[in-house]
Every structure is written in C-alpha cells, then in structure tokens.
Amino acid sequence: MNRGIAFIVALLAIVPNIQAGTIELRNGATIPGELGGFEKEFLIWNADLIGEIKIIREDVKTMNTKSALNLFVTGRGRLNNCVVSKTETDGSLVNCAEEEPFKVRMATLSVPAPDWESSGVISANLNIQRYNTDKDEYDIDGQISWRRYSRRHNLMIELDREIRDNSVVEDQLTLNYQADFLRELGKYRYLRASFEQDDFSAARRTAFGGAGIGREQNLGNGVTARLQGGLDIAWGELADYSCVGDDRLCEDSYDRNTQLATNAQWRLNWATTWREVVVFHRGEHKLGLSGGNEWRLDTQTGIRIPLKLGIVTDITFDYDVVSTALDRESDRENKEWTIRFGYQW
Image 1 (spheres, rainbow, N blue to C red):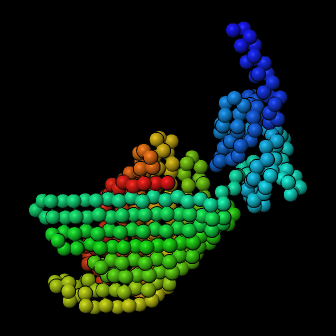
Image 2: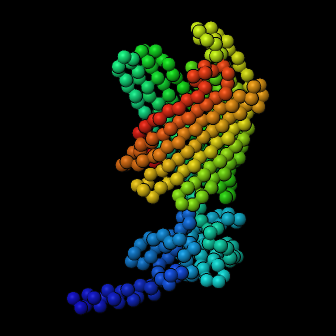
Image 3: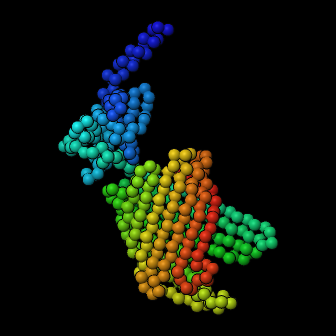
C-alpha cells in the first residue's frame, strides 16, 4: 500500500517536467498541460491528469506552451503551426512557422474553422381536425447550411398547405438559396435567389434575385446576431383579391411587373445554459422602390428545445404583415402559434 502511494506521489512530481507547458491564472493557480485552442471568450487547456478544461482568457496571467496550432489572427488572417505564449506585462507572443514572431492581444486569437462543415434542421407540423369542419393542415420547414473554405451555401424550404372540407384553402411554397462569401470579423457578401408561391394571396408568384452585405457578431453570454441587407430585382404575378363579393371576379385581374426592392434580414440567437435550450428571433423586411412602395414583414420568435438523438421541438410565434391593397383585408396580417418537431445536426 505504501509503495502504491509513493508511486503516485512520484508520478505527480515528474508530470510537470514531462509536459513543457504551464498556465498561471490570476488567482495564483498553476496548471501544467498544453494549449488546445480557443473558443469564443475561452481558452482551451489540455491539463495533465484532468483533461480538457475551459479558462476565461482574461483570467490568464502567464502561459508557456510548445503545442503548435493553426490560428486565425484578426488583421492577419489564417496562420499555420503557431506557438502562443503570454507574459504578465508584454501580452501574447505568437511564433508561427512562416512568420516573424509578433505580439497581439489574446482576444484577437481564434481557431480557424474546418475546411468543410454543414448544419441544418428539418421540422414538420401536422394538424388534423374532425369536428363540424374537417381540416387537415401541415407545414414542413427545412434549413440547411454548408460551408467549404470561405464560401457558405444556405438553402431554405417552407411548405404550408391546408385542406378544409376537401377544398384547398391555403397553399404556400417558399424556396430560398443564398451564397455567402466570407471575410474577416464575421463580415460577408452574398448573392441570393428566391421563389415564393401563394395561390391565395395577391402576390401569387414572386421571384427575387439580389446581392448585399452582412455581418455576424458574437455578443457574449451565448448571444449571437446576424444582420444583412441589399437590393433585389423582384418579378411578381399579382391577382386582385380586394373586391367584396364573388372573389372569382377579382382573380381574373392579373398584373405582372418587375421592380427594384430592398431586402433586410436579421437573426438573434441566445444559447441558454439550461439544457441547451435556444431562444431565437428572426425576420425579413422587403420594400418595393417603384409603384406603390409596397412592403412586407415576416418575423418568427420562439424557443428550440433539444430532446434526444438530434430530435428537437420548436415553439414559435409567427407574425406576418403586407401592405398591398390587392389582398383581402383579413389576409394582410397573420399571427400564428406553432409547435414543430424535427431533426437537427
């Protein structure tokens, strides 16, 4: 028994000598190990005997490590095989294989994204009602994003259909594709194309194509924001639903036009610390620059609750409003609560 204890004590004594790296915190603690990378406001440290831990960057007093990492340095871009050290007075020193050593603030260091990655979520909602009025309603939403190097592709599909007493009363389809050309500091340029069809609104079929700029920003405490805006060329097929009485008389009144429009989109995500629940808000505003300056606002606010094996549930409140006078007055504003189940990766 005594021999076992002696062996453990001896092992603990020699481990700091085996590992070249040490990190000293402002509270006086010294932890042997090696630098593993950076994640948001944290530094990842591979501590001896403990494993991977996360340390707030501002809590680091000094650091000495020999582990070489690929880094992304604000103002310099991507650098390979870099060793990072830190002193109490001189800040962080970065020594890369193909660069002269230079000093930076630790807040400007991050690990570059992998060459290829993808993410997405597909969700669905089904509502079946059998009372005085038979009603079948379902909607399917899909959002897929994949990135290769500095180009990111985003695809969004929305399908909403309602059948009441064997008659279709709602039939909407939205397809949206956007290519992002990523730059530094979360900035990007984009090209987008979109197609929307709604057989029961004034804007029966609409196609958009445009370009703009955007930026993503980490606001801290699990909050991220994305904002983008630009110009679109919009083509639309319109039907007049504004008359009172027999709507079929209005449906025969078609108008096709092409106009310039502005487009703004935003998204806020808050990744809470409670069971990985995410609170989100997103929206889009479109404004026509010719004709009657018609505009449209689509927003969605909700929470996403992870279940198991990638299954999630979304509880959302959708608020949409359009300004066109060709729609029925009851269709110009829409409010809807929805619960969806889906798969996220």
